[in-house]
Amino acid sequence: MKYVLDANIVIAGLNGVASVQSRLAGVAPSEVGMPIVALAELTFGAYKSKRREENLARIAGLRREIAVLPLTEAVAQRYGSIRAELESRGLVKTDFDLIIACTAMDLEATLVTNDGALLDGSIPGLQAENWLS
Image (cartoon, rainbow, N blue to C red; front, side, top):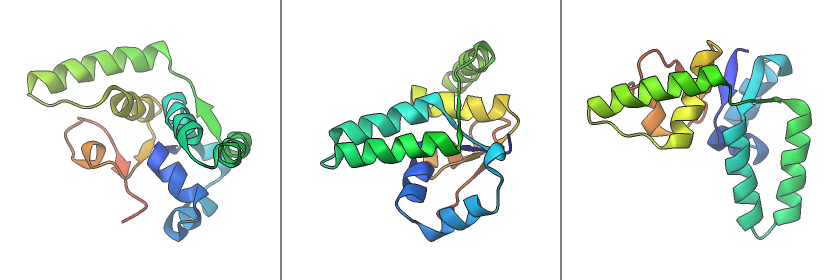
């Protein structure tokens, strides 16, 4: 696994954002994955949208193209350790954001996100890129 995609990047790709689509075109599908919690975020967004069925169908199509990455015990351990370390420094990240970051770290992959809280350099060892900037 080379890249782990955050939900905001997946949405940009689904919406035809050229910078994301061109980067994805240059990567083998086997090198890209999306954490299960990012899938949960996308599914929630689809259910609350006015185009529910269309968006659910788009997500189903996406799931056939890229791997959905599980929440493993190793990710859970990393999450607990990093969250405790961040909180000791007075830093707070949302649970899903931190689980997404820990999934990328566990796979030694680069997290692709547009989330400033994940791009701010505060998570030790996280490699992150923003394909929207």
